[in-house]
Length: 110
Length: 110
DNA sequence: ATAATAGGTGACCATTTGGTCACCTGTCAA
DNA sequence: TTGACAGGTGACCAAATGGTCACCTATTAT
Image (cartoon, rainbow over all chains, first blue to last red; front, side):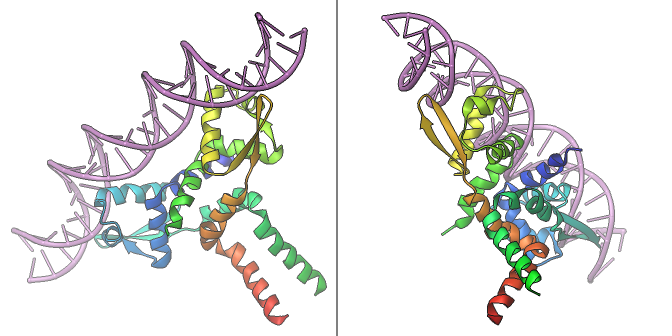
């Protein structure tokens, strides 16, 4: 019943610079392996990156697929959309609201 | 130059159930005092609530105004809008993108 | 003036979190 | 089949976080 709780995992996963950077990397190039992703974070070891990846995965923000001896990572935008829908857009009304209003007016005049 | 850093404070502030509930409370009724806000969280002391409020305030998610011996709290949606603009909406494309495209097409045909 | 009310501060504690490392498993190429 | 390569696990540690408490200041009502 509590739909706030599954969002909580997502919010917590997003509350880290490195993890957001990982999502950004996957948004730029989907299907990267652990070792390739590591190259983007020379300041931290493979293990650190792997921990962040597992946090993202348990929050369903990424999905994975093993290919031979490498593991490929794919971004899953659904939880972010849920955050936007069920939370953010209630507060960020000025942007969305005006666009929605525009859409309505266009539809009505059509 | 790093605009990720100021967003980081906001992301971290939002990564807590209690703090999001506080924002929700202020969204419902603006200008609440500390003690009134505390009534919504019987499971925690005034000090816990105050700490959360200060986190929200340093993230500019709320503003305050002293009135006599009580301190009133107001929601400031700007940082949430920035999170939406500069981050969320890049991933939550299906919703926003179609609206933005619509806006562009309307503007062009005008 | 005095007492009740509303809020603030710093120390303190338990838990969580970010990160590393030693070591292990599975896969591919020679 | 032997080694190099890609990834995984559990223990471990330091720092950050969530929360409480003793005590303090400022404001208001009597």
